[in-house]
Length: 473
Image (cartoon, rainbow, N blue to C red; front, side, top):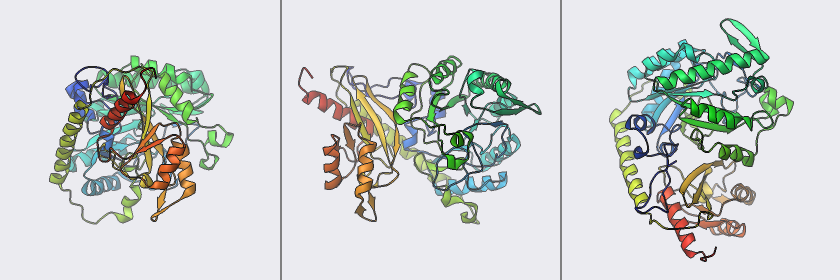
């Protein structure tokens, strides 16, 4: 992750090629692939949007956490869609979004089944889109069972981002997650199914890495099933060359009709998730900015504009302003230059390694502290210490504090509880009542850095806190 280094002379530097990395941290050809991809770059997710088209409903495995029949327009969960589209409908939707959302940089197909098992529909959609929208990046997600059969086609189509869901490397554990698979015209169950799936996933990962395709591994953390095992998964996928590892929580609710939901299997707490993620540090770089998107998600991460682009709302005539799209990308490059300059402005300092600052940030994008506290839909959580500033994750606010111009006391108490472990909260503006409630909870509300870049502001705040602290603190 890109971290302003607060201890080395010369200002800020980045630490690795993880999710927030800058161009100086990786090979130029890798930076070119990730710099505008909001899922593969934490930095890019401040600037660019993605969309998924639900053109691949068929699946070749059954997961105990999945039920693709359930849908709620307000729910964010993989496998959920409001409309299943034909490739022709999917292309029309992509073009409509591109015409309206200049931030759109990535088209992904993530189901609602498996993009490779339903390959004919996936390929037809991609082939048609790139003819009309050549500046779009192509991305797909798969369970990996059919992956080895399609690597040559993936490479030929310039799909340079593939996500594989890998929940185990031990078939004994896999048998608790996957009741069956369908492979080579035959259904397999139990331990044999898990063994075949594991072997195919590893083969597919090896083949993609050998061909220069960036691979993100998704893993669903299932308490009591694979929580400790995911540390081994992380080591294995690192050894095989995966670019990122996204450890995400099981979403388990009986209302969804999944096996885990109906049998009472719980999802992890935020503390349990963080514990596993932290234990994976040193292995494959972690993705911490995932929002577990729907299979028909549209917009920036953290928002979903899919209901604005349902088939009945698409315009009859679609015209894409490519000059507008290119102008937006030039604006982002200028903002990146400003952000890099701001990082260099952070003063180097010496401090005790034990000093840590945890900060919640209200932002509506552009890598800036630019959101009113009462309008925030989520907080981005950062950690500052002697090594720099690192991103820990996003926390969704289910109930905004300001609704219709009024502050809701019940919402405020839940928001304060959401960030109770934070030392400070940075926002563009905040009213007196929430200011007092946060301060009473030991969270310092700060609007001094309004409309400044996030990481340099946190680094500056950390430096100030250290300078003001007693020498023996």
